Length: 387
Image (cartoon, rainbow, N blue to C red; front, side, top):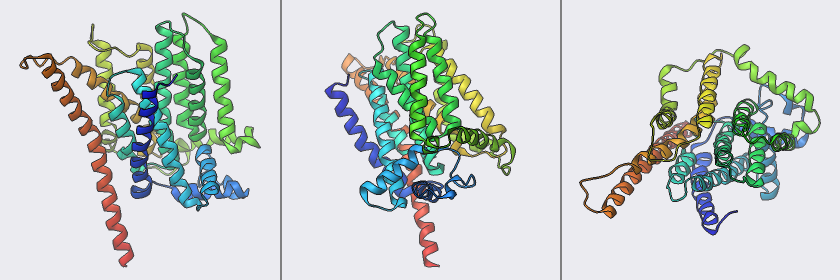
């Protein structure tokens, strides 16, 4: 049940996320916007072009398409304008929910603040498409909800049906947005829940969650309404194209290191947390950590062995580990003694100062990149317009 403080935090986080995401989608811009605004038009008109796999068909991008159509009608604006409006609002709701869940998982901690900041203005949005930009925050939220349910099970607490229903809702939305990465990540996190329930099996609950997630997927993907079997076959075929027929495009080691730097730090500190006996901060469940590690290895293996490689495919797993980086850093900061400071109040303020520096570095580095990217884009547009 949400408290007044949780509601206030959600509202403030939503406003902050709208500012960041609005800057991303309206000033920085993302890839393939024309494809997806056109896809919404094709779906609503029933045009055969909506099935063109060379364009936007096959991801499936259902929430993006339906949301763009809804904003187009409700606001009376063009599809081209409705797309960034929808993405800004949708992602801001997801990011604000992530901030609220972070606060529930670590009450009194500022973990939610850098997570809110980095997810709102992450530099990887500059190389994302509408579906990859939307599924990244969704899978971060799914990971955090999985963590909350897992902790509840392991600590033998009664897990509210709201958390279980929320898991199904987010899982269904993620798969309906990006079938490939959404299905793989959802399956991995579902396995975490199955493993956590070994001692207290509740197969009826698990089956209900899976069925509800499938129902959300079917409802939020308009192609499932009239051609479900063919559409699922098309989705599987589209996912395989990256390893078979796409033109070869390889990422070099520097690009992989650059996009993964903060994520790898989050992974490394999380593994260190598991290895340190008697850590001063509350550890993440081992089953959850090892499942995410296996997911990371599998996804990097799949993406780096494909013929066609792109930075945007890594966004969800990078976002997940980046979200856990400040949690681990703040846990280490809590253990700082500052013995040169005489009073406990001074030591607490010293720790708060270090936390503030960490937040500024994590969020500031992302924002600085996007500002530079937007400035460069503006200069290029000015050169084109003069010619």
